[in-house]
Image (tube, rainbow, N blue to C red; front, side):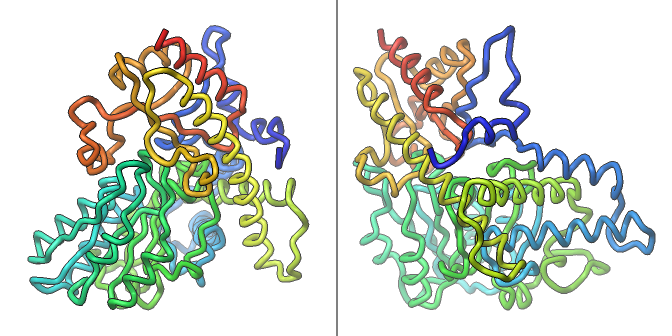
Length: 421
């Protein structure tokens, strides 16, 4: 174990909740993780002491703005952005993506091309296809390899050409767990002069995200997927954000990130996001080596990278246990990467179908045992249609996080095995 799981779980009050003495097995994490105590503490403190709107001369407004600046700085550290001004907060990733796509659409001409993939969540597909329809642009689709649900990179390369202006790609699949080679995508797109928008909602809770190393132009994630509240975040290169025309009211600020943070924001959610990042830094500080840099501003970034690597190491063991166990159930098919030597190509989100059971029926039966899993398409409609699973109800999705135990994984596998019997 890379860390003490008892101390990790102690940071999540909801993990102590039971129903009539029965514990809850939270394996629904791709749809939203449980919230860490530091995130709750930050939200409570904000609402008690700093609850005010932006830009006032009085104390609570000044203190509120200070917390919000801290939240931007924390997310810049988590994503290794060059500046907190490259971080935009909003209601959720979907709304923010629609906002950015609409702004980028003003730069497109009829006949320009946008590339999307069949592996992505629809929040990284429909904002682009709708914008393409509005602007007369052409949408080109990248196919997947059905045997392991990975992107067909040869097809990806063939879809990018001289008319390509925007490439939208997920970092990790919320449906089947595949981690994509985003750096290769960015390099291909930039070679053609295109911008790249990365949906990292499912990756950020499981691995270190470095926007400077990737070179991506935009990257989106959601705090409620990494142990915080329901808030969305988008990173964008500052020069792009500065040049883009935001859809905003006239009195609003004209500089990034505020020109994209329309209206009154979810301040307590931003404070909670700060707490979630502080929780992740606590993991790096508590269970990792001491930071090597003497620069205090860089130490948190180092701690966050260490935390994500520790979590990734443990979650690969979870994936190994989960895939090995489920693969032994007769009539069960695990979708996605199942080669145990390629676990670096997936997050611990494992989806399956089971003969004789619709995904909904299986999820309901597991729910009776207080095992929480998802069923359906999880808004990843394109891959379900590509695999011809949409009409039969999609898949059952088991999504682990670093606070799940191997015993919980074993309990889930045993429960699924009993379904087949």
